[in-house]
Length: 402
Image (cartoon, rainbow, N blue to C red; front, side, top):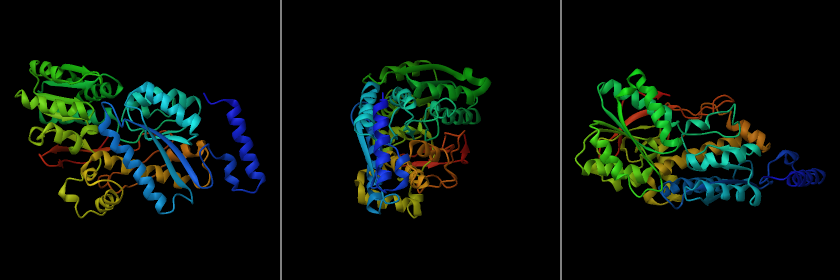
């Protein structure tokens, strides 16, 4: 817990700065804010079962480096301290307390994982520390009434699963549906959304199988789902397990229509490990441009992204959708900080995060815009269905509003 003494000390420092004639806004600024720096904190699974997502943190850091080389934000350089939590909630709590209490960061940005963010939300809420653009699509992050210091970024899982439910009814109204899901709020959100999308046809779900992130494989779950007689499969799993599920369905000769969460759409970390041929036909929902899709090669937004990857990351990162994600969410954070001007109090940072108007990013789909308000903590609500053709994601149909 942040002590009263620490807040009083911070106030004394600010008062002294005012007396010395420094920038007037300093009195209201958050810890970690100086005339030359904005210090942010983050936890990422650079190790552990969700380590494929570590590219997001690397892209965040790289993007802020690019901004710093261009002069920073209003003369301040961006300093993101990104710590490994191994996708372990107790470790997330430990590292987040370190970021807040020792590193004195102004706010937490884009920490990854539903269980990990859930573990730190009470601490951040109690201390009124912004928990910005969490890297998870759980519906719980869009609850400004009860948790006004926490905001999501990507489309929420219930929205995507709702879209899948409607698509199944439209294309296979007599489907027999099986669901593989991670046994936490992430996976359970897909069950909620799918059932809502199916409406009075929710009985089409004939089998559900969950897994724990500590399990080595989901092979046994896939076999049990096949035994149910299902002809449609929803995979609500993080990259390691999504790749296993795709590969196992193919290897045992099971050929259901496969729908998969967008958080595992990375060709580099999911489809290639699963096998490109084995991944053909998998359906997902997208809100960003697939860097492997040739239709974007002359697109100005893709060229901007490719230039960023070329200078600040590695060639392998170019086609990783996780790098696209980091590129987009970091740009959103920069927009918020620009809107803050010289008032970098935690209250104003949170206020501006909830006041984004029609922000268009280089790598979001044409027509997709980011909007937030005091009662809308779901910045991205538009998605499009896409199928994997063995090389890239081929989008089809209209941009769907969740």
